[in-house]
Length: 169
Image (tube, rainbow, N blue to C red; front, side, top):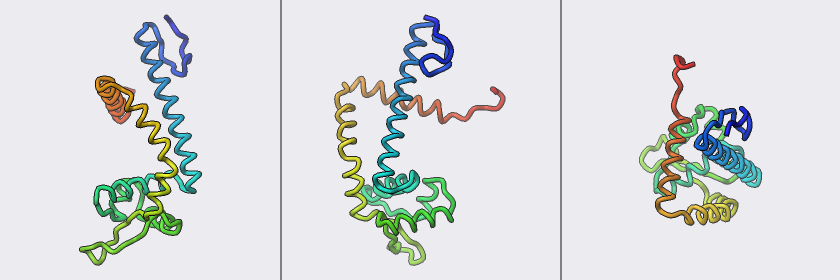
């Protein structure tokens, strides 16, 4: 089954059934990523937030659920943004009522960032039904299927995270 380069959305030659199957998986993964990106755009739009704002809020909500205090420096490192950009982002999220600054409980010079109860409710209201649908799909997998898919996605993550050597170019 020789498929022309570029067909099926990828330029890989599909000489064998296995290669054609692999390209089919990559196409499905690409379509999922496109759908997820569209969902994130809709979410950002409905919440009036940018991508980095939404990532910051998600990180703060997760930390809050874990009982961890997060300061601006940790959040900036997590998001990969500069101190100046972090200040602007925090100011924006405070102004929109998504987070609040609080004094650090043991360090008078430091601040911690906390999501407001309203922001947690807004995220749940905005994403709740979608998350329920995703859990239902994932929950329909057998334990073996879930293990295979989790392993595959971890290996794909590792493949795209690998830094290519300039010697191979």
